[in-house]
Image (tube, rainbow, N blue to C red):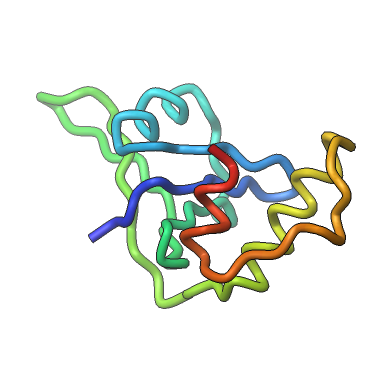
Length: 108
């Protein structure tokens, strides 16, 4: 079970993409080209790889594959700080969260 909202972390890019729902995931990510190191982090800290599935009767669809990796609140906070550093709008030392869910909710 995926706990929405989620964030998308692209390899080599500090900017995070906020995904409020599975529908947002499908619409935001349809045009992206993914690497094997891109992943989605849900509100529980669970990580998912992105896989493209296509068949004869259905167009290409994206699916999330659960991994064994679970990020801590400190790891998610680090990602959010890097994201905010790119924007240069917040004091990074003041960014702290109690839970992964709180951290992800702060992006919305």
